[in-house]
Amino acid sequence: MKGNEIGVSNSSSYYYYYGICFGGGMLSSGATHFAITPLDVLKVNMQVNPNKYNNNGIVSGLATIWKEEGFYALWRGWSAKLCGYGIQGGFKYGLYEYFKNFYATDDLLLNSSRNSIFFLSGLSAQLLADVTLAPFEAVKIRLQIQPNFAQGLAHGFPLVYRKEGLAGFYRGLIPLWSRNLPFSMVMFSTFEHSVDLIYKNIVHKRKENCSTAQQLGVTCLAAYAAGAVGTVISNPADNVMTSLYKKKAESAMQAIKNIGFINLFTRSLPIRIALLGPVVTLQWFLYDTIKVLSGLPTSGGLARDQEEVKL
Image (cartoon, rainbow, N blue to C red):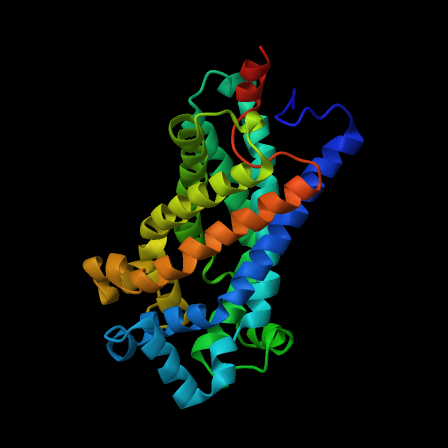
């Protein structure tokens, strides 16, 4: 790396910056995914039992689960979400910052478009982050759709291993990638472009000239747009992944055939938008708040953009 947007000048500041990004991503992702566990439980049930849940609203669906299975059923898989998405979030946000700075200063990509760098960075970060998430996701979905499967994360991990071996943890890795890679690439790119658009066309000031409150406000607006767009792109793969874990299909192609092409895009889409729009917004807000409290700038922009401002 030849330089980056924070002006890392020695190894200690280098590790401090990416350590904060990893820690901020872990805390923000883990906390937000834990908070929306009931909605995630409903989403998975809507995908597995569309005839039962898809004709009802979100409140009605949650009430149905509570009435039939009890209050705790709404929180099935909470530990897997807290730990799995926390670890994944740390790697996703931390690695995105690293790859964004790396690609922006790489000789081969020096003249590439900003969008190419955002896409590549999101792709690279999510590829590695999902490897850490897959085992937690495998346990979480089983906990949510099989009430008697296990008592929790600690009990579920050895059960999956005994029944299916190591492959059981990564049964859904390819569908997970097919869902999360497009989401991450589109989400990060949409966020970056939205930040740029808001400062240029709405705020009419550079980020460096805005207050902390204004910068965090821009982060929230850009994050909501990023979450909504990313959700639509990733919805088909999310339905396929749930079908595979439920063992309603043995392959992705069979799952697509069973679900139907139109249903891939529409099934559980409203609940996913209700889930991911606010979740992504809150994630970015918490992430950038942690960065600001640590003395770092809010997210958005490339190293070469900062250099142009200085020049």
